[in-house]
Image (tube, rainbow, N blue to C red; front, side, top):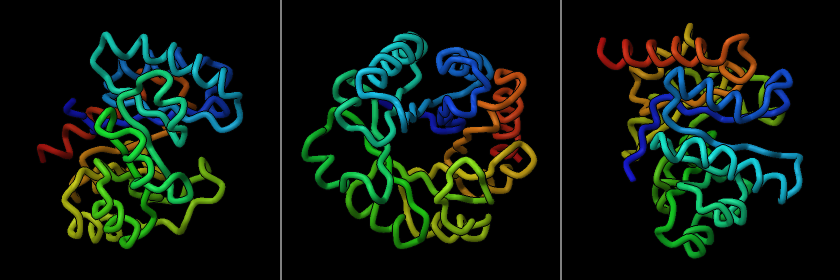
Length: 211
């Protein structure tokens, strides 16, 4: 499966202003989101699986990949397209031993060393960040900024998805610095109109890639 990482949505029910995850995803996809990572930190395993199946049913007919955050068991249960792992989650070598080639694996990287290690260990893509200050993740590292991102871009060859404090006003520079995509949470999930927010981001990405 070829993945279009250009506009990568990460879900967060805590920021969705009482809208359901499926409502947010549907609106975001209508606006141009190309990839969806389902992130659930507090619900039960059973509820996580139910959420994943609901979202997956919507995405599958539209050819948009579903990525599960952290939970390889949930990813396997629903036969997701991919799984995304943080630096404190299961090591990628162990995950690959379980998953084989059944799905792709993304790894979060906060530093140049993290990114180089992720590529060396067989990651399919890397989520690089935070790029800018963000309130979405309480334990986020120091922001890398466009320069820090560019340093990582020069060091690794696999796709990079930038995350952390990105919005239509500041993300163009990251796209021009070689990001295959930008990942956003609150910029879409908390927006008054998630579809409009996604469309504005997508248009910005297209302009940045062709300018």
